Image (cartoon, rainbow over all chains, first blue to last red; front, side):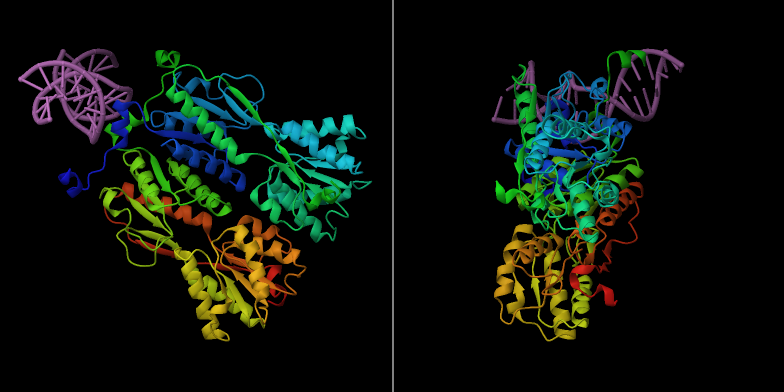
Length: 299
Length: 299
DNA sequence: TTGTATGCGTTATCAA
DNA sequence: TTGATAACGCATACAA
């Protein structure tokens, strides 16, 4: 022991886990890494893992399938479990390279049945309720700024918007659907399209908060008041949302909890050989009503 | 090969690296994981690593020394190099548990000499120039909202503020230094202290953008116009800064490049046995003048 | 070309 | 209790 300290000995974790068959580490694959959304997820993952005496290894910024698959391969043998966030339609993308025994959880992957347990967000209900809120308060021409067309969450949020417009509003008009990609700069640019619509919409539903923040800035620059001239709502409830001027009304998504739940599910499966009771969970959303929709005070 | 595909064989990276002595992976230790600053750093690390055919393993949210040390130990044997961000004064915290051959780079650790190569930001010059900019445009009572007292960057930014106030301004007045901690909520709360000062300052320098955003919101709520009633500047130039209303004047920090440079340095050291030419670099900052300081137009 | 043995650093197993 | 040895999964060096 004294000699160990003298020589500054530190165990080689790779060799150790080879025989132990336990790494005390969970891997996380993220598609991208911009903005507060992902930072929040990682916090949830990391802090929960620490509770269970585990570490988290994150590999992010995978813009395409091959990169993500390479990242998964790089983790095999170094982790006890894997959380994969891949918010697109192809949900069996990793099935062929994952060992059977490895606990895996898919994040935001799909609402369809899949080979792996999955955690996702109730995007449809969230979008529906925020649009219905706008409808309830007199808005009829409500535009939506969509997310990437291949993104599962974006698809579901769009579906919720359409359902609300059809069933509780004036019906669904494709001209009101402005394509977006979840980026701030796109929210900024989309405002010119929004204002060119005739008659001009009275409310904008941005499919995430980043685009809402970009749009808010463009609306200010265009001399429009929010919410008087244009009501605005977002989706996600990232930490910055409440600090906007005006504070952004949005749909609260339990981002931190998404990460936390993922870790608990993985840890549970590493301990028990028996199957986990629940294999699929859809986390609920809440309305976070603030000033940007113009109707918080009347609630 | 066919059998390998049939059996869905995937190599065990731990076993592989044991004999190869190469993991093609770089480890990153981060103290915390909130906000866009860290997301940007990780992007820089990750994308640059991919360029060199490496992966990045991130372990974050280490609130104290023991957690950070445990994270370092968990990585030993699994990475070819280690980037450690530890923005406090104790810079030799990890020296005893790092093998001599392992390439290591310290991020934001110190401006003092250390056993490891380090990458940091020229906080002092950045703070100094932004405060001098305010002084040049007629402000005399300039308050500062500081960062955590143990944080190296915060200390240097405060030092730059003091130097500017002493050498180019009315002198340094401790009453104008409001303690903060880099969090948005603190920026929000600090405004009441700011407005209670008599005579009231005409400008506020927040030590980072998160606090500036919180302060901006509180100033709006208090009915003060920015920049007319209170000029406001931040530090970091996170992506959201330009989308504030008004857009936030701040000190641009090459956050992405910090991560990118760290990876290049580590990769270089894994390839060559000879020492790296430069062992310490201080990345320069730029003024990002926008509307919140009220003097961009006159530049 | 194909096959076989050795070693990477550690833990686990079994014998002494 | 202590000590020697096999084994984890793979890559490399060598023999066939």
